[in-house]
Image (cartoon, rainbow, N blue to C red):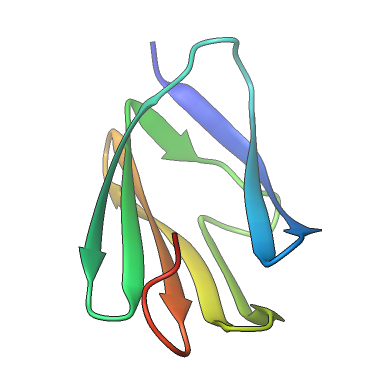
Length: 91
């Protein structure tokens, strides 16, 4: 069953942010992360982006040390989240 992501929230925490995804079902999608340069890339499998303002999300400078957070539909059944750091890869 596909998890439909209906909301993305960035919640400040000490030293950065938490990315909170609201889904329309109780199923938990699989998440695979990799590092590319100054970016942490998370592919969220078995999911679709269904946000009220379209099927993408982007926020610039959400916290010190984080240049941007963006999320897009990668293919029919997966979403890609990219968190880019200003001084290295976020963890």
